[in-house]
Image (cartoon, rainbow, N blue to C red; front, top):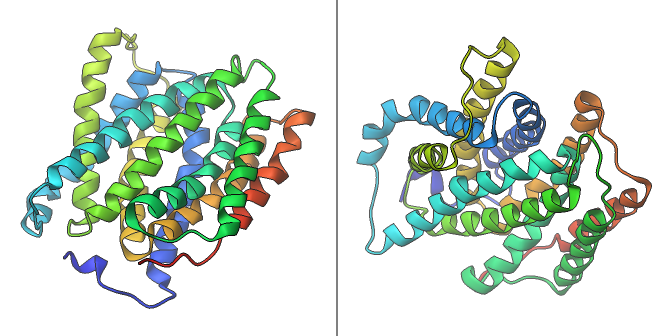
Length: 301
């Protein structure tokens, strides 16, 4: 087993720090991705993001591969992992941010801990407290209200479609998190390298299939900076998140995504001038209440 996955104490400062940094990057991703879409087609952004991440990670791939302990059948989980995230996840989220605001997408991401908790209950045998089920229903109701009350604006030309795509992205992120727990014998950096490599191939093909327009002239510096940030934020957060998922339970690690809605909402208002409608504001306490109720110590059989 990779040494980063050794058993730890109840409170692991290194894992908590890794997850806190991850949540900051992932919250900022909503904002930067929204800015990048002002300059590029979604598929172009995603291909550049994956390729940049792969170029940063691949020089160390031979070293990480030597520490790999392959078990029979792991290829199924590896294939499912990279297919769910980054391939399909980023595809859904990239188009979601084209149609909705970063703030609304960030609020929908609050469902991830609940989805992972339910998935861990069925697949990893991590018990889920009764109040967590109640929280799941309340939070899901809040997301439905947020989506149904969405109004089309210049920043959200089709909020209903965008929020629905973001919800699909969260389902994919749930499957990805559970796959990471099944691949604990692999270096988190090796997993991240596999993700960026698969993502580069996937979005390279999508770039050809969709015929997405590629800028014919050099984009402005701020556009290139968004791509650079997204590439870096693919390498650092995913590597750190893989460590956190492996050192803690799936539910514990996913619970840190509770920070994303609040951070994204604040960043969206500060940097993008986004705001929720009066009816959507009612959905925020429902989502947060559901998330709070979902927190509890699950036991693994």
